[in-house]
Length: 290
Length: 345
Image 1 (cartoon, rainbow over the protein chains, first blue to last red):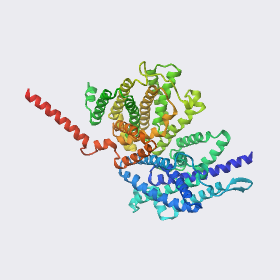
Image 2: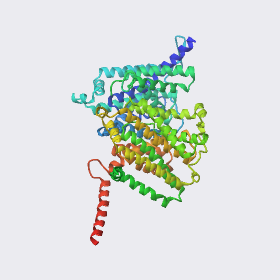
Image 3: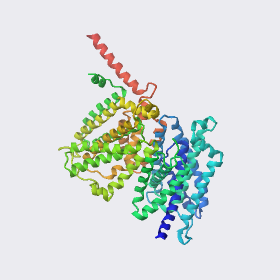
Image 4: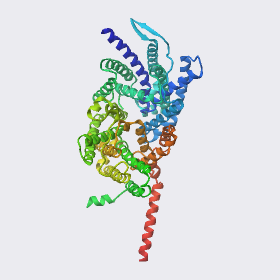
């Protein structure tokens, strides 16, 4: 019994790390620019497709090389999207609603481009590392452990970036008070663009990391978008720390609820937990003011 | 007497609505033999009301709701189930469906009162998404949703209202759509509507002036859900079939496109958008898989280039646009004609 519980806990933690990688980019862009990006799931799936293309085009492609191409490409793509689709709307009165809708249109466009280009069938990527590991008597797949390790290093990296670098500090300043940041000479528009581009790259990394286990198909981004959305809202929109806590809480909760009640229940439990939390704390667990 | 005078005083949005009504009343004269065109026109009216109710919430009250199709589905299922299982007469079923949906709308609105922005979008969209598995599950089947097959053989509105009877359906739904839009028009011009707009533009200021935010937001949810539920019920009786497919993401996005193209918060842009988008969607149908791809590109382009939609082009804020100029031209021509006649006399 305890052994079984421990196994479920381990799979829950692995799941939590996956959700953390998925959601951290979304919360970052919302925290800095208050843009809710509906195309986030499409960026995720396009990251995976890009990796798939690279694996197909060059035989003997390794994961470090794939990441070295996917990350800058998606970063630039995100930069272009922000400049072209989000930035022009910022001057309008109802810009929040407008950006939600324009990113929704973009999601539709990207998903259907993927459908035309790659077809409706599920595709998969090779695992990061093959085989299994023996951790303290438990057998876990190496791929999951590598994902966990990468996820943790990404989170640590984001934390250091926000704390230590100039751009990271600018992002936090803009997140706290956009007008104040502009007064002290921060070019907020540029910070918005970089935050958006960074979030696009993070979504793409998540896509590459998860594609070996969860497969990819053109509409696959939507499940990710909704899950990341709940993770982010539960933890507090805009709070990176809250998102990471909530990813692990929800990941472990999903593992236990799925194990005890059956696989169709975790989502219901997620919604119930989220609604209850929002009823008590409207800004999520760690959310700060609007 | 006073209300009569007020009703006569229409502004340009009201006149746009009446012009649309006049055109729509005449359309069957040309198309009554073409079942296909009539069907598209009917769907335009149905989606137009959904878009109108959505615009009422999002454009006027500033509530980012994504739950409108949930209301549509609840209205459709409620009326379908009431008439199928309980033998309720159809018109009564439609009315009850509207009231049930309004109740659901208020329940959905309750957790949204304390939330803002993207959180409301999340809660309402979660409501939409949770309906699909609920309808298809064993629980849904136990309630009587018919599971994945959906509801079949829903009775028509009345004798003579089969799916093939396009012209009576068209005029019925035109009446319903016009009444819905007229109701929205009247509400947005009343003191209640002013309260909605003030809450949208600055909630703290509106509340400091004594506007009850909770009451008005719940009213928005109730009214919008009622209108959407009623049109959902009409949809169920028109097609005779309802399944969870009406909650599909493609229809959801299409109606959102209507809102964008028509102009959000620019009454009656949603109705104009409904006609443009439905016909555009039909015109693009031969392109099959490229359709949604083009749609997505259009949405992005329209939002970036024309953020206020078609109504923003016709009646731009702060200056005289083509719509205004056309109105002046008509007015001048008429007054000139009248002037001549009075001189001749």
